[in-house]
Length: 94
Figure 1 (cartoon, rainbow, N blue to C red):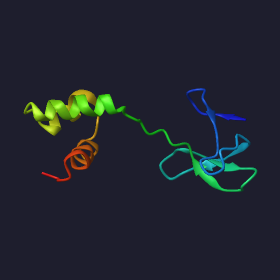
Figure 2: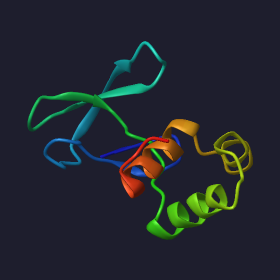
Figure 3: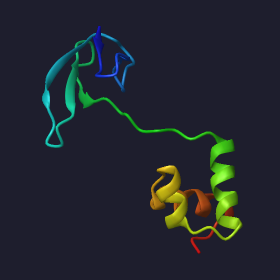
Figure 4: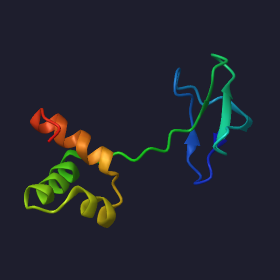
């Protein structure tokens, strides 16, 4: 069993097995792991997930004339993510 820097258990993103071994660093400096059961390599995915309620709240601010750039600055969500949510919700990119 391997733990990441924040103390969480790390599991294989392919087979979900927890039997991993550290295997160097990526070019970006992230820890790489190799699964002992399926022999695949990878890094820990530390992406943030936003709930539907959070997405709705942030897009609501955009509907109230707050710019995507301002929302991005205040809440730490990238403009690309906000644009993707808006496109998914409305079906258009504008």
